[in-house]
Image (cartoon, rainbow, N blue to C red; front, side, top):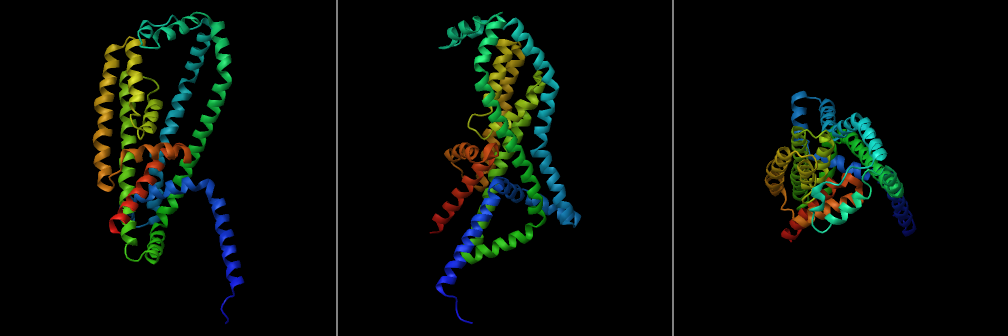
Length: 346
């Protein structure tokens, strides 16, 4: 059999390139879900392996792991949705009364705020007990608010879809994980026979450390924040706890929840004791998780610089939506660890 001619090789490469491009176009809408599913599977693999040993059936273990991840990842959104539904009537009545009677007189503490206090007080006073003027001002702001709400809803909806899809895909990573890893080790050994498997182990350790540190810290801070808010009687505790969960990877993110809420209790509601309790709870309990637990866990797998965490959070959100809050830092940490390992070996 004669060797293939140059034209045959060119045609083969063109067909291969077209095939690869077509596969990418098909997979691209689900790329973030696939990557996050792989990260979830790799991170929770020790627990899955333990379930396989206990049950002796990989399919059953994969199903149990999928349900557990579904409860941890998707269930909080269901709880928040139920909370919003329960309080929708109360919010509607409050909005109707606010429009009919207008807002009350501005609180005294507003005027004492530096720089903006006097201007904010004058602006508030112009609408006090004037429902018509407030409605007119709200109508002027309605279009930008409607556009913002539509875009925010689209981002949240897409993120929920990607999260749910990633949990579904993770089932197949669990079920067929051994075969996938065997093929991956074979491919890596062919590309870099000397250090390929070592780099794969570095990638696995780094991914687990960063996910445990970032996602584990976010879960702990979200739950602790919700508990503190529930203790002081904030009815939107689940929603604010979920907000704390997403703000956790952001530098000084959780204080953006507990500081304004504590000040609101003190100055607007007159609940000084509960407001101080919430501020102390946030500073001592919630922040201690970020200051102690996260560095301890992440340092075991990767000495991740602060700037990479920040860039990973914001860049991940831009690239992948709100799922990128966690996906971005993991990818940057993985790239940083592999580059550092390669440079050390060189």
